Image (cartoon, rainbow over all chains, first blue to last red; front, side, top):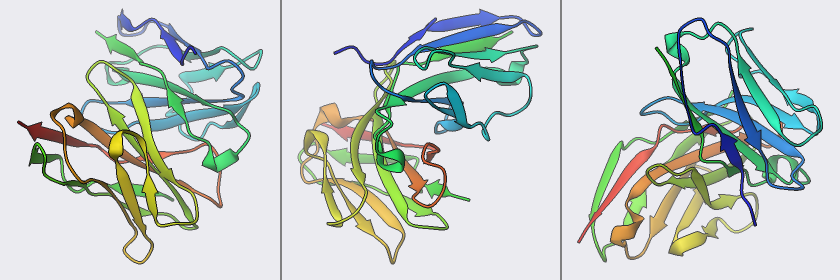
Length: 116
Length: 115
């Protein structure tokens, strides 16, 4: 079946601009996660949705970052007033959401964001 | 707070030899532990996880990992390495007693298997 998909695969923007990154989870998965991965580092947790609500947004670095999942499926990560330090690979993952902490998270291929 | 350490940035082994990729963790409660592999230009792929029960966990592609509570370790192993195992490997931990979704990853270990 189809895995997690993310669009665009690459995004180049200028400092100060607004960007949106999209994630389509595996069909039927109620849990969705966003991570950020900088070069040479592991993924860093940003936010976790269970259904439409953000169950944990403790990883969002500041108020320029925001994510939504209005219908409990597709999610959009929104970054305002982008800075060069936002450049990274943004990863999305989904899981069935029925086993809580024991769920296996399935990752998409990521969106590489470059802020010039 | 939870954290993961992968003490080796790089591991090199010859094809056919056993491999070990090390991982140690820190959580305030009981851990759930995961290994993922990342190939170039591809997303992270799940290999295996430890939730409870037998300390030796078997996963995809012949990999296994041993949970050691006293040493707070979860090392990834394979009896006989293949060149195709060459990739970037990540260990991750979740704390059973805190929020369900938040995984903390190590910084990864690059495994190179030489023919």
